[in-house]
Image 1 (cartoon, one colour):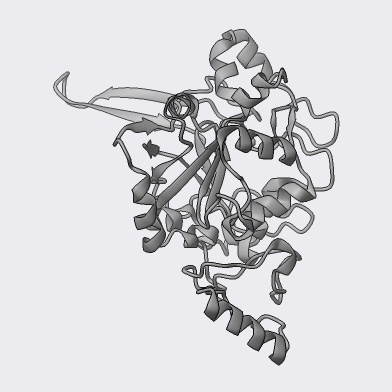
Image 2 (cartoon, rainbow, N blue to C red; image 1 turned 30 degrees about the vertical axis):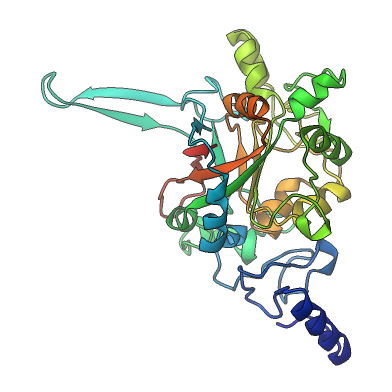
Amino acid sequence: MSFPLTAASNRLSQVKDSLTFTKRPTSIPWDPDCNAFPTRKELPRVEGALDGSAWVWGENDSLGRINLLTPTRTKAAAAEIKIGETISLNLPLDVPKVPGFNRQIFEHKITDFAGGAVFDDLYTMNTQSGTQWDGFRHFSHLSTGTFYNGVKAADIVGPKANLRNSVHYISDHGITGRGILLDYRTYAKSQGTEYDPFTRHEITYAELVACGKAQGIDIRPAAQGGDVQIGDMLFIRSGFVEKYYGASQEEREKAARRENKRGPDNEQRWAGLQQSEEMLDWLHDCYFATVGGDAPAFEAYPALGEFYLHEYLLARWGVPIGEMVNLEMLSQRCRELNRWTFFVASAPANCIGGVASHVNGLAIL
């Protein structure tokens, strides 16, 4: 499907792009090595797709914006490795000890394989219970039950189940590129903004702009004069991990066991990004390959308006969401070094048919 341009406007656009060495997608599937992409308001209409979706990488695509992590961008991101220091982005597999949303508690069993001479171990876990990537089978466009690229529940479970949107495709590709950290928690404290990450504190776009400015980062996309490059991986520190380790086990369990139900009376409440149109524009137009943070839901939970960011990021645009990512040591070192970009390597689990995965990620400074 081509973009709806008149012959004259198309020619003018081609001339301008040739003069500025700009390469834009002109038909679907898009070329991920393009260096300019449409804004959210400019997205082409794809037949059969949800309104506002970016199902633009081909009808059989299961990578979404992971497609943007091309060899060219990964090679360029390697320049972020300045001192070679490696920092884990993973919480221990049993943290949180009691997961929220009534999810299964991690279990670890060591087995004696050969009379004390050889040992094995067995993990039993929900991939959503700790440091995780939400894959494209996890969260649908709720009112239609449609997952990324038109996948339905019958494609995931049941007699007609197939492998569309399986997390193993992302595993096969790998996640490597440039990460960018916004340490909102530290910024908020510097402004006298005190909040409990175990409550529904909304982080606004304006606050992220100010946070970035305090760090010396213009969080607008490069196409608009900012510092965010196509294919960057966004990380936002909101304070959940700091709060978790500072709380008693009783406080942690009380927060985790709050009842999760639909509607404004939902007792599960977590700090995160505000659901707003300007937030959607920013998240889309930056063309992040992934987004994530230390919060349990990335966005403020529950959503009290008309939509969840998950519906756009996962179902409409194909952007994996990282949750409960351990950003404590990374944020400390970034402050000490006064630099907020770094190389990221993540190897999700190669689970054929999988919904999500442990992040298994590293930041390299």
